[in-house]
Image 1 (spheres, helix red, strand yellow):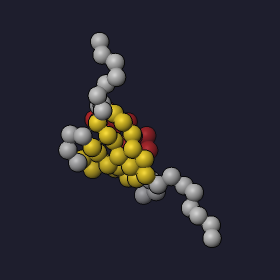
Image 2: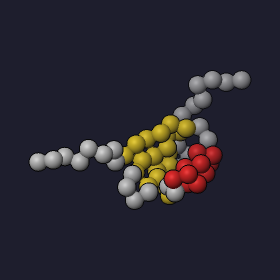
Image 3: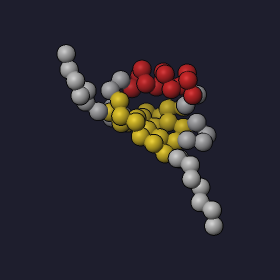
Length: 60
């Protein structure tokens, strides 16, 4: 039996959800669902995933 070998869910870390959402919406047509300040899910009919809020590694 052949298995589906495609990626179907990914999570991306980020600090600026609004900027990330704007970029991916424009670039790939992803549609986002807000699940509060620490998580946003996205979908484009073939791929699903989420943005996970993280703290910046470097500071000024």
